[in-house]
Length: 250
Image (cartoon, rainbow, N blue to C red; front, side):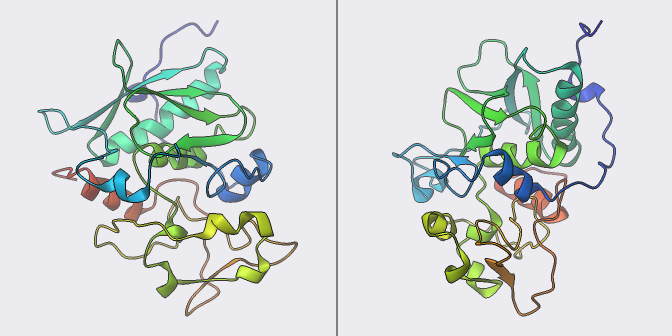
């Protein structure tokens, strides 16, 4: 019954219903595994933040002559038709707001492979070959989480790990579970001359990796600013993508 082909261009983008904040869902689905950097990021030991963002060791997806950034992808047959629709809906939202374009893989060496493996996770940036974006069914296949993991694959770290974060959030180190303190180390990031974005889809919640009922990330100077609540791209997320990939006309 569900054999018809769907593409990102054919799926409408609608506002998603309110859900558990995405960082809580990601950490729950990953069961707080210490195997992931920053909770959901798979990164080869040989790659550093500096190398990823340098011109010599770029992990960005290349731009075509037409000014678009083409990213090939595959969707696992283990996903249901509805799962595939949700993934493609998330990809279409990128296409509507940026110069990023996703297309089914033909024979490209470098591509994203969406698979329902354990938890929600992604590698950082383009690796040059097949790279898995893990979106476990019944938890990770929702618009905000899909876009969060795809942004990792496009080269973005978590917002609370950016190099200038200490001016915008306070990290309560004593409230962090001991074996997760490494997840709060600052990265050597290119912040693209954009403001810190509390509403970013890449920002974790106040109690991420925390001891019971304890806040680990507190906005400053106003601790009541909501964070980690997004379920789709913020305006600044879109701006950062367009600046990083030098998208014209967006």
